[in-house]
Image (cartoon, rainbow, N blue to C red; front, side, top):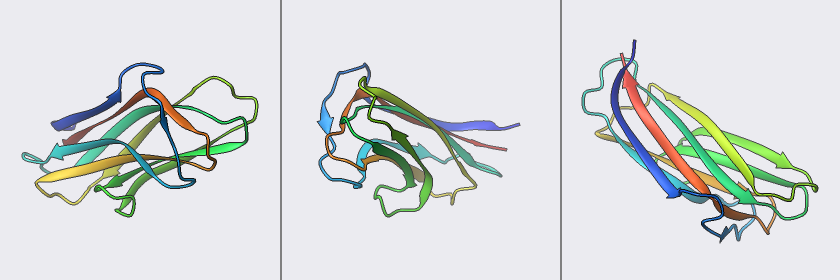
Length: 140
């Protein structure tokens, strides 16, 4: 059975349509959440369990939205999770994208930092909220 070590939350926007942040560069990761998890007290088999939500208003075109999570702060840091959703021309309302990710046996340092990014395959995508990213560290 796992033991809770630490948990953190990054809440960029709490409600629907509370922000309007355009994605201005195609296929370029844009940060929307970051957490730093303290590892003091970790024993064997550490694992970080993460989840999140991001909402976007899409252009009227076929578009792919990619969510990626890295262990670190830069898009080039070790990739922990990545998923792409493709939306069709008929989508008019904001789209809520939820995800769940895990990092099994990460290298233990005093703090593990995870950063969540979003990118779009087409200009005209706008982040509208809510946006949330959180994670917990457990070990045996």
